[in-house]
Amino acid sequence: MSWEIQLRHGLYLPQIDWWLDARHKVARSFVSHAHFDHMAAHREVLLTPGTAALMRARLPDRSGKRIEDLRPFDTRAPLSTECPEVTVSLHPAGHIHGSAMLRLEHPAHGSLLYTGDFKLRPGRSAELCQPPRADLVIMETTYGRPRYTLPPTDEVLADVITFCRDSIASGYTPVLYGYSLGKSQEILHSLAGAELPVMLHPQALKLTRVYEALGLSFPPYSAFAAESCAGHVVVCSPQAATSGWIDQIPKRRTAALTGWALDPGARFRYQCDVVFPLSDHADYPDLLRFVELTQPKRVLTLHGFAADFARDLRARGIEAWALGQDNQLEFALS
Image (tube, rainbow, N blue to C red; front, side):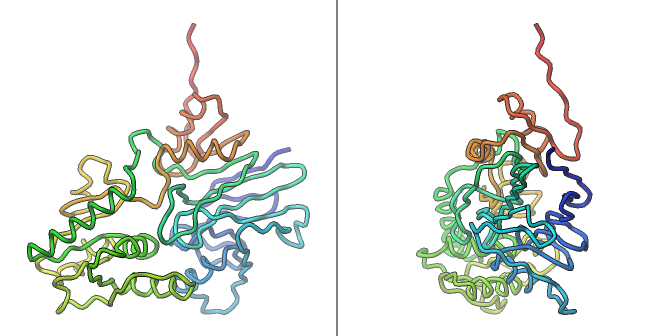
């Protein structure tokens, strides 16, 4: 007997009646991290203390009825009194602060590892990813094609700092686009030692203060003020490019920090002057390395180029299938 997986606006495990990163309100769901496409106003949530703090800031429980099952990293315990035979442990995913992979183990079904969003590369504002072994791995494959191979992070950040310094020297305000949760804090931390004054968009400011309450430290920064932003680096979300917010900075140079910078035309997609390939997701080599580390008997892929990556794993002799997609079988011709 093996784990039964159902895909419907999130993953559902009917054998234990739990969801994984459900996008609509359900009775109980594991929440891997606090990005909006991985959480909703569930009755009961299983998550890390860090994710719980960020979820409260982004999705407040105004009714006071949400049940939070907080699990620290790397502790193994029964899932619930209803499922005492199932043990659960959470492991750092390296995506953003508090992000976790979920490992379940059942005496009959074996072990299951759900990654949520993750990356193996060390981050400056997230815990280092520590993948455990599992029989069945359900993994995120956003960058599941070989061309998504990111350059070394230190080289990218050196280019970002050069861009900021050159912009200020030319009389422009450098604006760095990064999501308010996770990427903005990574950008801010990465500017440490560059001696560049930084201003944060209000949403990035709010969540950076939650990070600080969780014990993380950052270089000096201030709240965005249009009248005094000249000479500063401004960090804001990509939505600022289309919302009109960015118009408060008339003389600016803009840059998006994203793994999609590897795509042709990414600069036009993000409506900015330059793009830098920096991501909080695993690139293609990291995806392959992850499978090597976890040594699964079976892999299910999810998001992005899921079918492509599953096909590549099958070519390597690993049973792998893309969830919710057509899986084209390969046949050897004699």
